[in-house]
Length: 214
Image (cartoon, rainbow, N blue to C red):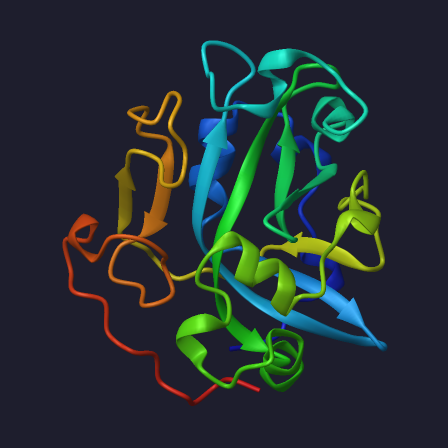
């Protein structure tokens, strides 16, 4: 898969929309992180939308705090929060002050796989980027990147890279107890790197081909 060009970086207007629309449209985009002068990352295959209202699972439900303030920042801001000694990353959506975001749950890794395996301390592709905490560890993402503007950052961003046609899957959320029934989890149906329940897929996920990966 060809590395996306710098000119294909997503603009702020992409993020300045309803998080449900952003969550769907992020599928197939490329999330890239620069480490030691080299971009590593892959194609986004699973997301979850978190709303600014009527969503008890959203971190914005309690209003702005020191820990969630990035979620109320400009669209395209990176909101990184800790979970079980690891981290999860979110793309902030809608206008500044709104408090909505999209959780990036899984990547189909394409570039810098050796680096990602080193960060994760495993060569098991099934445990590389299949889940939000694994994804962040693979890309060496931590709270130091909280509040990063992905529209301008030279360290982490999301790019459009000539995505192929995808089959969209959707389900209730995973790993939350409040507002769990909201069908705000989106994924590429049949992709092997999507986390969670295989029964959510219409097409059985198959292991990826090793070609075109670096």
